[in-house]
Structure formats: structure tokens, C-alpha cells
Length: 285
Ligand code: C2E
Ligand code: MG
Ligand code: MG
Ligand code: MG
Image: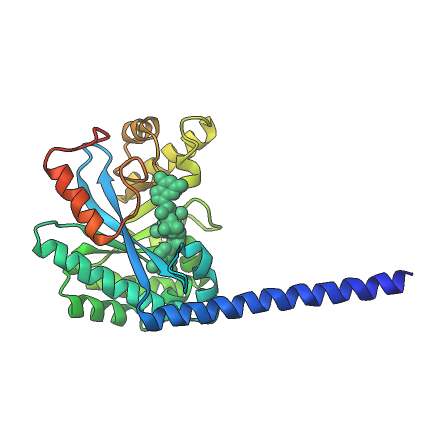
């Protein structure tokens, strides 16, 4: 009867919950093992001027090698790392590693500003500015060559606190970019209240600019709004020449996406840069 079905439903529900909890525990253990083994990897994706194609920076994107040697993309482990607090260790590692790498590149003659993603939990940390200062000092990277990517939700969570944290970061001389702009719930008021340098237009809009007039309008609107507030714009996820032409004509400052290059390991990026310097541009400038 109904009672029986209800009892079964309950049993399935808890079985599912257990499976879910087990998967999480396994992933957390996996992450801790990878950390202990030194199996975290940063990939770097070029960021280019929309007009001219000059490479001005890179975004550092975290990957984690699992027990079997497969590179896990961040979507698979960042949410759990955020939930468990492990993100604090991962984020600190990413920040220091990216700063050291950018410093080595500068010494080799490549002046690239490196963008590092910050999770909400890292942004909430009252010691954030001090940690960033230590990473800069420890790596030798000039603050002007570091950009921090934060999300709208990080900023909106506690506006008072965010204003304070951003002021501290700005005082160090690092640049601040709002990632995935346009996808979060936020008040546009924060754009003039907070010391932000760049808006990063989310890929979901960029990938539609050539097919959906509404997305094209949104992107043009974001670029104009940014410029009127003296902010730069970066378009993420640029995959086609048509998207690039649209963005350039709309006045977007910087572009990042598979059209130029996928995220890659540091050495691969060096080869890619060397090929471009040697005149091997792919003409997507
Ligand atoms: P994000 O910061 O918005 O990074 C851009 C994502 O778009 C990257 O995915 C990148 O590989 C991908 N992408 C770039 N160009 C294209 C393109 O043309 N087409 C398509 N389809 N995708 C493109 P990835 O590396 O998987 O990272 C996903 C997200 O994970 C990031 O989104 C960021 O939110 C987070 N993440 C990555 N590294 C870190 C980190 O060190 N710390 C924190 N807290 N989050 C990170
Ligand atoms: Mg980002
Ligand atoms: Mg983004
Ligand atoms: Mg994104």
C-alpha cells in the first residue's frame, strides 16, 4: 500500500544521499592526495588586445591530476573544495605559483599580466590582502602584473566588507576584474562604489553575439557602460572570427578564447609565444 511505497521511497532517498556523501568524501580524499603529491597544475590562456591581437596577459586556470593521472577540470573539484574549505590551500597555491611564473616570464622578456581567480571564500578572508602582498613579495612579481578575478556574488555578499577588501587590494597596486559579468544577481551601483578595473563579459553572451540580437545588445551595453565608468572590458570564450570582429567593432578592449588559444601548460605557452613573435600569427589579430 501507500505506506509501503512511502517507506521504500525513504529508503531510496537515504541510499542516494549516502552515495552522494561517499562520492564527496572520495573526491575530497583524492584532492588531499593530489595536494600532498604536488599534483596541482596551472594552465595559462592568453588574453589579447581585440584590436591588433597583441598578447597582454594570461589567465591562470587550475587543474588537478587524479590518482589515475587524469587532469580534472576545475568544475569537477572547485565546488567541493569551496564547500570543505580546501579552496583556501588550493587558492593560495594557485596565487603563488602564478606570481612566480609571471615573474619568470618577465625575466625572460615576456611582460604578461597574470589573472588569478579568487573564490568567494578567499575573498571573504580578512587576511586576503596580506596573503596577496606576501605572494608578490615572495615571488618578486610587480603588483602591476597581477590581476585578481572576483565574481559578482563575492562582492554582493557583504558590500561593506567587499569595499574594504578591494581598497586594500588596490592599495597594493593589483588590478581587479569582475568575472562572468552579467550572470550574477547584482546591483550595478557597486560598479561606481568599488575600485574595479575591468568587467569580464561572460561566455554565455559572447557565444551568442553573432546569432542573437539580444545578446549582441547586452554585450554592446556592457562595453559602453564599462567605458563610461572608465573600466576596461574583456570578452571570454571567443571562438570564432565573426565574434571577434563584432567585439572589436563594439569597442571591446581585450579578448580571450579558443580562437586565439586554449589554456596550456607554461612551457607550451612559451612555445606559442615564441611562434607568434617569429611572425607565425594566425591572422586572428
Ligand atoms: P572562468 O574564470 O570564467 O574561466 C574561463 C573558463 O572558460 C575556463 O574553463 C576556460 O578554459 C574556458 N574557456 C576559455 N576560452 C574558451 C572558449 O573559447 N570556449 C569555451 N567553451 N571555453 C573557454 P576552466 O579552466 O574549466 O575553468 C572553469 C572555472 O573554474 C573558471 O571559470 C573559474 O571560475 C574556476 N577556476 C579555475 N581556476 C581557478 C582557481 O585557481 N581558483 C578558483 N577559485 N577558481 C578557478
Ligand atoms: Mg576567470
Ligand atoms: Mg570567466
Ligand atoms: Mg566563465
